[in-house]
Length: 152
Image (cartoon, rainbow, N blue to C red; front, side, top):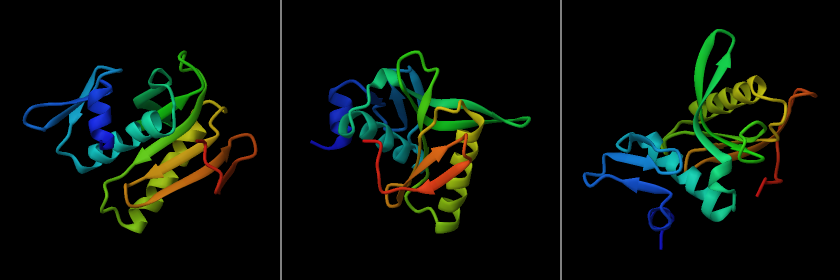
């Protein structure tokens, strides 16, 4: 069974009949599934829950992040519990055919989100389906480095 089939079976996601909309059932949010980036974001979400064991209740998607006077949206934030007060992982998803320059820009974008959120963020995961990088983050030390250690 594929990751998406598991997600459908376990009622984590729902795909519309015409396959144009995905609904993340735990948040009740629907998105355009024709968007290539959305497919990767759904895959990252399902990997976090089904492969790495993070409770769906500890995950929020499409999280508003204020950077200066700009409002942006982090794709996925994993929190240490269901109160969603202490983010521990920030995930930025990019479409599969992202260039290396775009992927690098996504790393910087994710770093900005981690810096803007609570000082509890431990990891940043930038994922495109084809490219995947995890970084250790420490806001207090302003540390941002590639790591072979994974939060799962």
